[in-house]
Length: 195
Image (cartoon, rainbow, N blue to C red; front, side, top):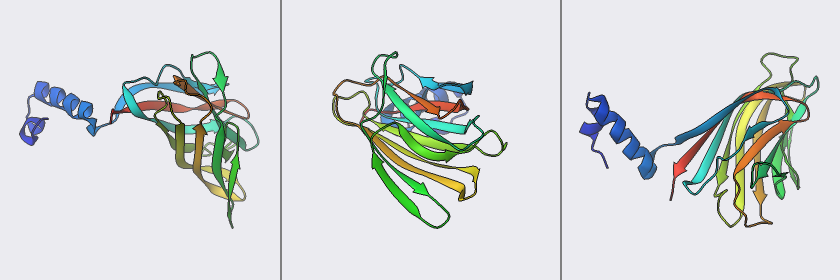
């Protein structure tokens, strides 16, 4: 493990080498890949999960639908990059100006009333954590974020959701996001070193 004097050294070779050592020791998120969707059917991230990491994070920014109405947001998984399935179960919280309601069901939806193309500021930012997606036990996905939806009941629309895959021990290799219509936004994937 590098010491602080190495990290603060002005020699860029030392800094680069030691930054990599810190990241490999579990001290930082490691960038894997990204995709930008622009009025696409899906924002697809294939071949992102492997035995390299136990824990992954997708950071999504400026996500919105081109539907004139308030679209929902969905996620599906793959084990091979060509066949896509819905997570087994989901629990998401739907907010209004006066209450919040938890919804437990199966299916791919994890967010309601996403911003639409009718307003330039109607976008959401969120992260999705994936716990052991390449493992042989339950796969857990956790979402958090918020956006400006322009929807009268929830102008500020928080995101608070979970999904699991529990019916198969097959390792997952990727995910894709989509809305009730087309989707736009930037999606970056990071991994955290093995525990």
